[in-house]
Length: 263
Image (tube, rainbow, N blue to C red):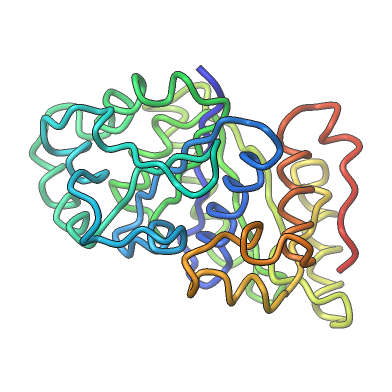
């Protein structure tokens, strides 16, 4: 089985889903067979890849709470090496239904294992909360990737998230690691953004990815077209940044040499 990475931050508006979608797409473009699992009831990762609720019968909801055949929840995307386990707003109900189910924290791990096996990477888009859905994602994941917006409140809530990661590691998933922090929506012309980057790198050191995701209009536009930025505008700064992040993530050697795109 390949690596399973949860993209998580309970603070909204930090580029979490943008990172999950475009990192998954970039890994696929770089030649890695990749599965994107949408665990956010908003379903933004699903619609961001051009798949709508009316087009799917089986979703992550059926995977978690029903006896759906795991392979039936996997849907192809426009990218040859990228598949998707979609989500719809039905997933809101899973929060309540999971409470009474046996092994409630392990439901995703138990059901995802046979699906994820053929993929080099499985990327899980978590909801913007420390909910039972997030706990399920952390229980199955090998690592957690945390997007941080380069602004004054960047570290707000990070302590709570890292505490949750520690608790899940202690009680449910002893191999869970912090994959790293990635700065998003970065504007190099902004002195505050530069200051935030310095503070984050000083405090977390090598746990911060060298690649920085710039503030880029193409990243904002692409979801409305149902496309990743790598399909919408492959030459944009946003697409270049996520390809650099994918190379950095893919292995120790690539991570050590991946160049951060100019922000």
